[in-house]
Image: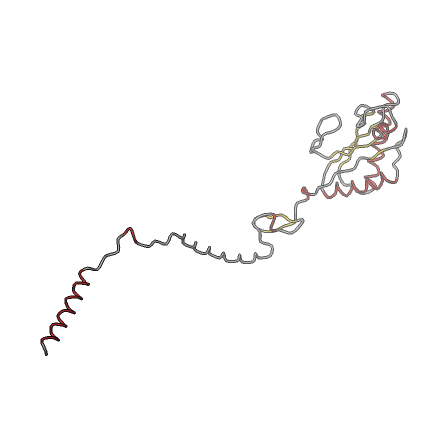
Amino acid sequence: MSSCRQLALAALALGAAACAGNSKAVKPSTDVVDAAPAAPAPAPVAAAPAPAEKGVCRSDGDCASGQVCTDNQCVAAPAAAVQCEPARVHFAFDSAQLGAADLESLRASAKCVADRKSKELLVEGHCDERGTQAYNVALGARRAESVKKYLKDLGVKAKLETVSFGAEYPVAQGSSEDAWSQNRRAELRLPGEKRSDGSVVPEK
């Protein structure tokens, strides 16, 4: 090999070594950092709940209308949950006779008493303020008895009792025909309810 070629190769080797010795390390201050927030991990997809077995429940909301959840089973709602109230009926002046609308109201009341399986029913008789106290008490008693008889004719099995308050507990104040017509009435009270005098109908 010629001396010139040897010199050239030696020079190239020295230059490569010099370049290798002068390589710069990247300073930490010049490191490139991606400041963009990392994308959140996708939320796990909840598995669809298995369809509930028909009739199986955890609460009343799982059951059909008219049913309640008892011991994880949908069953018919108890009779006590039946929501209805016996009607109030009214009478003409100085009369204990029931009108057609009142008879219809009492038929609905009879069904309500049966649906609620009530064993007792109190019928109150009331009058307007006209007439003597003794006369009004007697008239109130006739009105209560009239209602009691009709309910019995309808087949109501609850024990029916009556009481007359005369004009003592009006529902409307005043001395007008409007007030009087509201006060000539019969009220039906179930066990546990308050009578017009504030006492509670006992549950026997």
